[in-house]
Each structure stands twice: as C-alpha cells, then as structure tokens.
Amino acid sequence: MDSSTLQIFLAMAGYMLIVIGIGVFYAKRSNKSSEDYFIGGRTLGPWVAAMSAEASDMSGWLLMGLPGVAYWCGIADAAWTAIGLAIGTYVNWLIVAKRLRKYSTVAGNAITIPEFFSNRFKEKKNIIMTLSAIFILIFFTVYASSCFVTCGKLFSTLFGYSYHSMLIVGAIFVVVYTFLGGFLAESVSDFMQAVVMVVALVTVLVTGTIHAGGLDAVIANAQAIPGYLSLTSMASPITNADGVQQVVDGVAQFGEASDYSLLTILSTMSWGLGYFGIPQVLLRFMAIRKTSELKKSRRIATVWVVISLFAAVCIGVIGRAIFPVKENLLTSGGAENVFINLSEFLLPALLAGVVMAGVLAATISSSDSYLLIASSAFAKNIYEKSPKAAKFYTSLTKKDADDKAVMWVSRVALLIISIIGIAIAWDEDSVIFDIVSFAWSGFGATFGPIMLFSLFWKRTSYPGAIAGMVSGAGMVFFWKLFLKPTFGGIFSIYELMPAFIFSAIVIVVVSLLTKKPSAEIEDEFEMAKSGTIEE
Image (cartoon, rainbow, N blue to C red; front, top):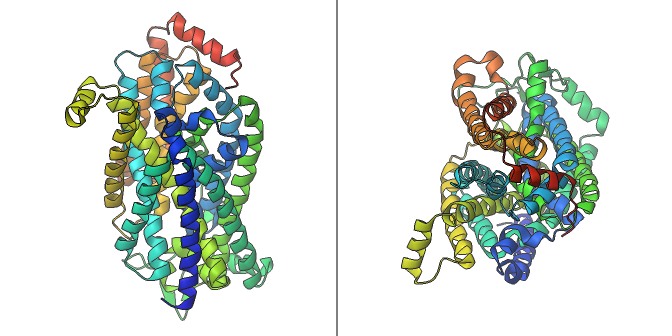
C-alpha cells in the first residue's frame, strides 16, 4: 500500500470510527424497547428527519450510479431521473408527511409500515401486514445488495483487493453497525452522512470543472458527442460483444444519437412516484417529533436533493471530459467508477479519502436503513403476530417471547437478509443503477398507491388495499421480466409508471365493488385528517 492509498485508507477509517462511535453512544437508548429500536421513540428533529431521510434514500447510486449513467450515455436518462426525484421529494414531504405522522399515531401507534396498514384497516387475520412484510423483505434484500455492490466496487478500486473480498468486508461493517445502534443511531449518523455526501459531490464538481478547463470546455466536449447533451436524445456508445466501448486511435466511439421520446421522459420522471412507497422515507415521517416541524424539514430535504442530484449528473459529464478513454470506465457497469476515479485524480490523497468517505456514507446510510426495516418487517409483523413462532422461541430460550425477543429475532433476520444480499451482489459486473431502479419500482408500485389512498380516500376498502398492493408488485415483475424483454417498443419504458397506475385503478375499482369501511375506520380517518398530534 503506497503513501497515497494509505492516506485514503486512514481518512476512511477515521470516518468509520466516528460512525461506530455514534452507534455505541445510542445503543443503550435504542435497546430500551422495540419502539426506540425501530422508530427512535418518535423524537427526530427537523434537520435529522430531513437529512437522514434523503441520505438513506439516495444510497451509493447517487455518487456512483447516477454519475455513471451520465458518463456513459449523456444527460437525458440521468437528468430526467433527477428531475422526477426532486419533484417527488417535495410533493411527498408536502402532502404525505403530516398526514402519515398523525395517522400512524391514531392507528394504534404503529411503528412500522406494515403495522400502519394493518391498523388502518382494522384487519383481524393480518393478511395485509404479512403481505407488506414479505414485499419489504423481497425488495429491501435487492436494495441492500446494491449497497454491497457499491462497497465492493469502492474498496476494490481503491485498494486493489478482489471485488468479492471487499464486498464481504463492507457488508460485515454495515451489519455490525445496524445490529448495534438501531433506528436512532442510524438516523443521527445519516444526518452526518448527508453532510459528507453533499460536500463530496460539490467538491468534485468544482475541482473537476476547473481541471477540465472550465465550464465552456466541459460543454464543448459533451456537444462533440451525438446526443450527449440533449434532453430529447441519448448518446450511443459503440460496444463489442462483451459490452466494452470501442476505442479507435485513442478516441471512444459513439454511434448516432437515439431518440428519447416524450413517453420515455414521463416514465423516467416517474422515479418521483416511488417516494410515496419508500419505507425508509415514510418511517422518518412517522418518527418526527412534531408535525409543526415538517415544513422546515421539507425545505431542508428539497434543497439537499436538488443540489446533490444536480452535482451528481454534472460529475458524469465532467468525467467524460477528463477521462474520455479510461480502461475501467469502458462498460456501463465500469462507468459507475467515474466519481472514484475523479476523486483520486483531482484531490490530495487525504482529502480524496474524506471525499471517498462520501461514497461510503451514502452506502451505509442506505443499507443500514434497508436492513433495519427489512428485519423489523419480519420480527415485528410476522414473528410477533405468530403464536407458533413465539412458542418456538420460548422452547429454545426458556424465556417468554416479549419485546426483547422481537428485537433479537430482528437481528437474526438481519443476518440472513445480509447473506442473501451478498449472494445477489456477487456478480462484479452488476450495475448499481439497474438494481436500484428495480427495487425502487417495486416499492413505489407496491406501497405508493395504497399509501396515498389510505391517507386521502376514506372509501378505500380492505379488499381494495390488498388487491392494489398485490397488483402493483405483480405488475412490476410482469412488466420487467416479461413484457419489456419480449415486446420492447412501448413496453421498454420504466416499469414503475404502468405498475403504479395499474395499482391505483385496481384500488379504486375493488374498493367501489366491495363493502365500505366500518364507522370505526371512518372515524379514525377523520381524526387523522383534522386532529392535532404533537407528541
């Protein structure tokens, strides 16, 4: 390990120690009860709620996946995705946050998303709770694998060790941290990580622009590539059979620009719809201290998202100017290393280590959220509601299956989920952006429509909620795995938009065809709509 690499390692190690220190500090408080462990006792302030929500949401794809897309094929895909996410962030904080904070308290003081849906519809057989928990387990396991891919790529690129060994090391660190601190430690550290992420992005953006010869030089380079700087077309790298971009006389080869239609723009912007169903963001709404503080949180979150997304897209364009041809950037998956390459190239080693900690920050802030929510979904919403599971626990430990047992079961589930996530991430050619886009569409279509209808339409029925959830999730898989590869064309659009619309239609139709909600459910709806809760 040379001097520069050692300095990068020391900077990142120092960051890790700070994160672990936060976990240790909050460990005792987090382990008081499952409510403290899973939702922080509803004590988040506006800054922590906003910054931790966005940091946990963006993950490593913000610093690797999004710049990689912009580097590889120009700004259209990346920019429309960013625009959709920025709009979705604002609208979600504007219309969902306050109502969900109130309703989750009114509906039996729910502390997980499945529990909220179950309590909202007063179900007796826990069907919607179990389905919600299962879908969370599926999509968050996929989501966690994208974070592990980020760790593997980051550490192997920096330190030269194998992708697989670095994948395991990164996963172990995340698991140990999540195991220790719970939601409150995760949220506080996510606040710090959000700061590190935006500083890292802005630092690389500014230094990269200067090194490339200024903004005019960056733009001139991008304009020389057909479709690269257009919002209505995409650049088309010419690749060989292995997906490696061809290089002739030191020049990366591009074909004619491909069209980026209005329908494709709308489907790409539909990334913003995903926010209505993303559990790690929705949990922050439930955990905030006072509803009166949500306006401040909304402003903080929106500003952070706009700055971060803009910087991430621009970094990909700057990377193409500085590294027009670089061996480890000549595939769509390899292009996701552009942020790491720029950081190492542009900055002194110690500062590069701090900036690189931004990638690690993004990864940790998301993966700990994913693992905690997925494990809590199993422990709180499947194990705790099963008498047979409680009896099995008692037979093994000779102790009653109490609140502490739920927390320990969640930790065992966390380990199992992590192992599956590592298996999914084992392919080192995995593209972070693709993995995240699938999980994002899964959450958005499964939980987004039913969340909106649950909060804002009193007539939503229990069968309608179940049908909407299942149809949304099913359509994501059907569109992604069958319609898109089989037919192409119009079916090549991002699966979130058609799945979201289909789920919404199913909810309305089934609700109108089935029995209206009980008076008790309608009374709670009105209480959440008009009540004031400042816990």
